[in-house]
Each structure stands twice: as C-alpha cells, then as structure tokens.
Length: 170
Image (tube, rainbow, N blue to C red; front, side, top):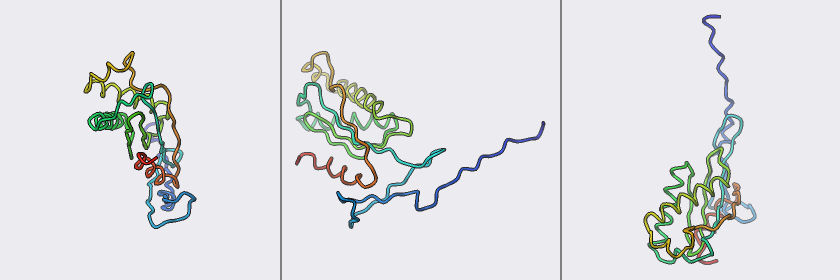
C-alpha cells in the first residue's frame, strides 16, 4: 500500500459567538457598563476556560507577611512559580497571614496539583531569599496543609477580581 497518506482529521471550529464569553461585573448577572470578553480555549474535544480562586494560609496563621518586603517577595515567588508551571495569574493579594490568587490553570492540571506546585515552589523561593524567616516556623513549613479552591465562572470573574483587589477592606 505505497503512496497512501493517512487522512487529515478536520477539527470543527466553533462559531464566532462561542469563542469568547461576556463577563459581567454585577453580582446578580445583570449587564453593566463594564464588561470584558474572556477568550475561550479550543481543545481537541471541547471549548472552555479553567479559572480558579485559590486561598491558603500560613502555618499556624502566623503573620509572616506583615512587612512590605516580605509581601512583595511572596508575590514574586508565587508569580515565578506559576510562570514556570504554565499557570496564568490574573490577581494576587498577599495578606499578613493568607494569600488570595485568581488564576487560569492549564488544560490537564487539577486544583490540588496547582496548590502543591504553587505552595511548594513559593515556599522554596521565599526561604531561599529570606532564610531568617524559617527560624520562626517549627520544622520549616511556610504554608498550612489544605486551602480553598473555588472555580470562577464567566459572570463571577470581575466580581472575584474585585474581591481579591479590595481584600484589605473585608
């Protein structure tokens, strides 16, 4: 069977109306003046996005990030770790004893895997650049086990982003 080439599979592309979804800034879903469009990703058998609001705390809720230097170092460590693993970070807010993060995870990554990668990588980079902070924590653990992961839909994206930006007020 010489000369026969395998058939090319045609991938159906969704119509223009499906490729992006309108994101509203309102709590109840009514359209408002400020609306953004979130482009959808095309995969082999589906179309969609994977936004997550991740929250986790420091070990024993110690206020490890009270100073500006420690907060900015933690944020930089989180962003660098996320970039290394293909996680797109939209918003980060580092509080003295916990972290809020709005991110888009890669196609095959679960939220528990994202927690493991972000917490482990950021702790490593934080302690590497600020070794004296390890002395306060017994056994050298920066983050407590677990956390909160909530998927963010189209209508909740701007609301969640606003919530993370104004976390100091809550």
